[in-house]
Image (cartoon, rainbow, N blue to C red):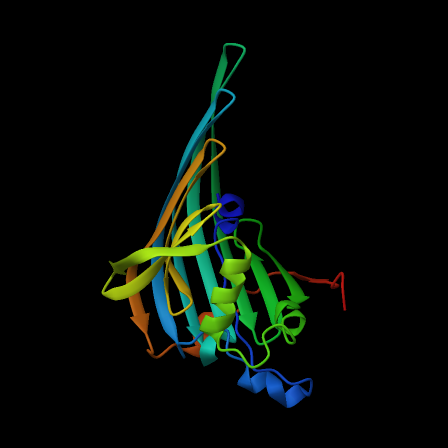
Length: 223
């Protein structure tokens, strides 16, 4: 389920970055200093006789204007397969955590008890494109370049969101942070929505702790 839902999530990053190392402390991925958001998601598909339904829960914590962020997701997906009259049901569970600490990212797989570590290249690659822009300005420019447009406004959990219509569906966005996503494409329908939102709240460093699993380092493809 995670692989499907990630295709519909846009992370907004805005930067005021210089090339020296001290500039890392001034990077703002979000226009909000800290937050905790809880999402629920539902996904269903009907492709070539294979029907599936899934549901999940995602908890996001971020601080330092998004330079530190952790996304924990638990999901379960059931697939009913009917191929040439042969029917069977399969179930897939996931429990993952994505942790960003400045320019280092960690992907934690709790079911397989493993961690992969890699250098986060996105901020550096956006240094020039995002120069002298706020997080919101850069996010808006990115969406427009992808064919997105604002079609209205709607309240999500007390926050007035812009509703963006995209080729992949709709997104409800508050200050660069996605609070709701709807997509229906190629037989796959997905809805993800925030059920609890707290901004500018205390976020403990303990939520960024890594479990004691074996680690592997992944080398970046591009430097």
